[in-house]
Amino acid sequence: MSSVEEAPDLFADVRLRHLWGTFIFAIGSSMVGIVTSYLIYQQSGSVAVTGLIVVCSNLPTLLLPGPATYLARVWGGPKLYVYSRTAIGVVGLIPVVLSLLGDLTTASLLLWYLLTGILYALSGSATGLVRAMIAPPGKVPEFNGALGRFGSAGTIIGLLLGGGIYALFGPTWVFLFGALASMIEGLSVVRILKRAPIKAQPREPFRQGIAVIRGNTEMRAACIFSAWCFIVGGYAVTLPAIASSIGTNAEYLSILQTASIVGGLGLGWAMGKIHGRVGWGWTQRICFFVFGLSLLSISLVLRQHGSATFTLLTTALLLVPVGFTINMNITILGSIVQVFAPSGSRNSVMTAYAVIPALFIPIGQETIGFVADGLSVGSALGMIGVIVMVMLLIDPRRTMRQAIDALDESTAPPPMAPAYISGPETPDADGIEEALDEVG
Image (cartoon, one colour):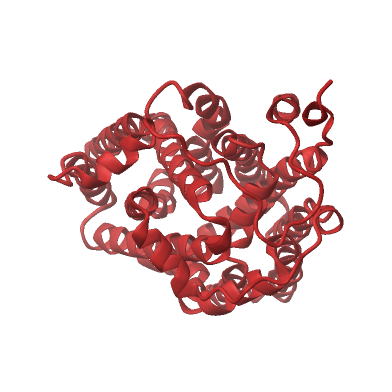
């Protein structure tokens, strides 16, 4: 037996723990998300105000890319990930106290999201660094797809439980579980700290990541299309308003949000089937078409003002392909950035990529929220559907599309461990693939 075949798999158990940590975190975060969005919409009656949740969560990422890059260089991705997620869990106890004191107001919740957003901002690159590190060689899309599947399963459970627990026991227990779930997610990768010692790295300014992305056609195209995905993904801000138009039960919102996530259960399977068989470019365009067509259909359903049951069921069914296609696109594009990021600039590149959702998700949600408040939810969703259809015709010189299509014709470099990792060589791909199959 060759020495390569006998090489130990350093991160097989870490991958398994991280998959389950992602699952538990998804349960907690979705429970917290549905309760906070429901409370804020009920208190304000405004889609735009509800969208401020995302603004407060993401604004710090736009303001702190420099410190985030510095921390990633000094601490390394794994340590930054563990520390930040643990700190977020501790800060997650604040709404527990507020709930016990009866002070869960819109202002206090938004301030809490702002504080949590600061912690996420300071660890912006950590998630991508850790996942690129522990993914099997050449299997970054598949591993991201498996994480998406576990995350979707946890989100579905959390959405269904969140509304019920809130109705029966109030928000206190929801926020408590959310805080504990964040700590569990951070501790899921703690074993990396012993197996991959951190070495000092040369100074890597944030602007270096911007320069690398601008100089790499594939990564630049992936970032541009990611921005579009995060903008149109702002449709989710309308779900509390749709649920309120159907009835006052929080479970209606649970059903709609669950429908938008349930397609993600097949994400890992789909990524494995598509990778190497169907071009990323064609996959992306098909996803955009299905996404836009489904939102246009939801817009028509809402304009018909049918019965509550018809509106709920039809909208929920249409949200399944909406959620699946947008998550598929984001997974593909994020994997491209992870694979093509050079090891010497990985910290700054991943921090720069983390700025994209922080900038464009709030823009998308607030724009859609203002349209929904000013016109109607149906008009807002119809607008997104039209924009997505137009996106299929954008780029007349096809430079961006050709960049994505070229990925199917080139041999992408395998994901390399970041520069601060030392230890035994990466194990063989077949052994890791078997381990991934076992947990997938």
